[in-house]
Length: 126
Image (spheres, one colour):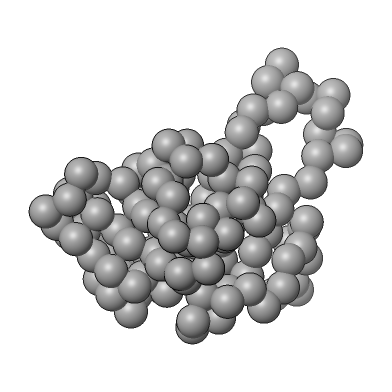
């Protein structure tokens, strides 16, 4: 059986641009894409922390080390510059691979600089 899992996450990225009149998608700093293992044109889910919007689009490569997170096209209605978002990519693995599978979790600051990288989410007590 195949299971859909979180492959990679850019956590609390700050939207730098929102361009309605643009050929769709989400432009992401190329160095961040490489570090996360997210491919250009790969489907991504974006979760807007500011307004609760959740939407699907695809990643396109922005200039390396530009720190750009640009939500474009129709999705520009769902995120504004300054909004914090979580960008996730998912993959499918065989159930028997789950014991060794680890996602890439990248945490960003207000400048979209990496603050830490993890391969698991610690469970916090309520």
